[in-house]
Length: 245
Image (cartoon, rainbow, N blue to C red; front, side, top):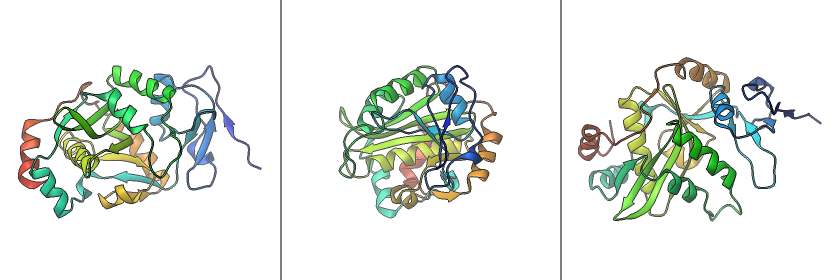
């Protein structure tokens, strides 16, 4: 039986090499530690993220292969382009971060629980307060009907979760995210693990070693703004093109 690496509770910058992750599809790397901003940011800079359920210790993962989106590969279907052009949703950034995270933590038809525990929600709220975690919101009137959130370091965005209460809401949020990050000089978006939903939008799987190299290259570049806003010129192009290139 393979032994799990337990993190030093006092050293928040210490993680094992990702190559030591268990050889399974999810890449379990370590357990323990905490969800302090310092440890979370140290993890992301190494291509590692936390993912665990209520009652478990904090578990840290680095999958191989890794799902990513290169913005130039965004795939927008004809029906989704129509939805974007028609402005069926009002899209904002960093307006309702806590609401988005709470909605992502809500029950899903295919899952009995959630990995976005109250502890996790509080941890990402702390990152948001520091300008490191961001959200995209889709609204219909005053109702939040879709969105996503993640962590931005340097010129890498690490996607965490998305939700949709109305058809296509999370996809529209993703299109807005990708086109803004592309314009802001972000060349890679971490999608963590493969899903059919993300693959339909153009996400692909790459070897972990390549992903870690990209993270090392781009995380050290100048960071994006601490608070994001929808750019009027980018939004106008989205209305004209529906998000297609």
